[in-house]
Image 1 (cartoon, one colour):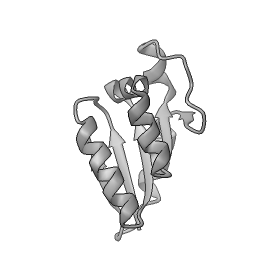
Image 2: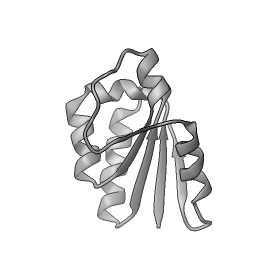
Image 3: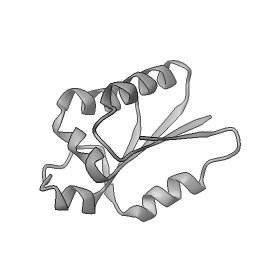
Image 4: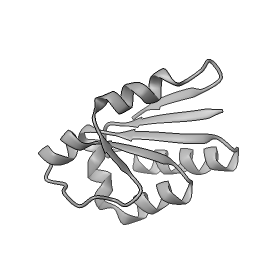
Length: 101
């Protein structure tokens, strides 16, 4: 089963970290797309580490990073467009889940 997480804000970091940790423990395949103010979380090395530790497949809105002057790229994360976001959501089945923050 997949868990897709759309992160649009940096306000719920703790909730996202807890959900990712629990999903990993339960064996979910985790896919994250980070956009808008959510990209500010890239400045938090602890948050980035937890995403990597959980084996999350992480994609980012490159435009959101650009307009927020976040130019340092995180190794292993895909810098993409909203097309990637749509692709993640379109690949979900009835058994999968999508959370939006």
